[in-house]
Amino acid sequence: MKKYPAEFWNEMYGTDEFRYGTNPNTFFKEQLDKLEIGNILLPAEGEGRNAVYAASKGWNVVAFDISTEGKQKALRLSKEKNVSIGYEVTGVLDFSTDKKFDVIGLSYVHFPAEIRKSANQGLLQFLKPGGIVIFEGFAKAQIEKDSGGPKDEAMLFSIEEIKEEFSSLSFQILKEESIELSEGNHHKGKAEVIRFVGVKK
Image 1 (cartoon, rainbow, N blue to C red):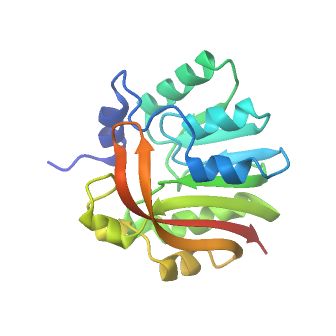
Image 2: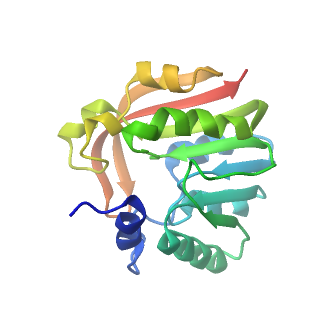
């Protein structure tokens, strides 16, 4: 029987282990450290590693995920690191806020193919003009690797799809590359990724 996404992720996160580690994504950290501190939105934030890092640097963090277990882990991590994060349990198409953000961070956010374009474009409404998106996700070529990611090629990214789905951005960086992943036990080994930094026009 196919599991609904919330059920799937609650099962994934419902252990003591932090599946993708407790350190922030490397590309996210590198790019965030260059920016002036402000308000950041972290969709599908899971166990909170990027949210907790951003908060430790002084960012005002709003995060969300469909997983209640993910939220509990994120709040546990934030308590351990003595920082405060905002975290809602909601789906991407149901998320709503009056806030506008300086940055949106998307690290391995692979929405189901049938909602991905509308989800990604919907998120950009919460970004200020001149705001920045920091993105790292698995490329189509990752389907051949066992270092992590969905086993559905339609959920993986191509450069062309990125340009289409994030058409309201000007890209400062947009590249597909091979990297060595070391993020917990579930993102580990050689991986094919797309990374970008985009500015809202």
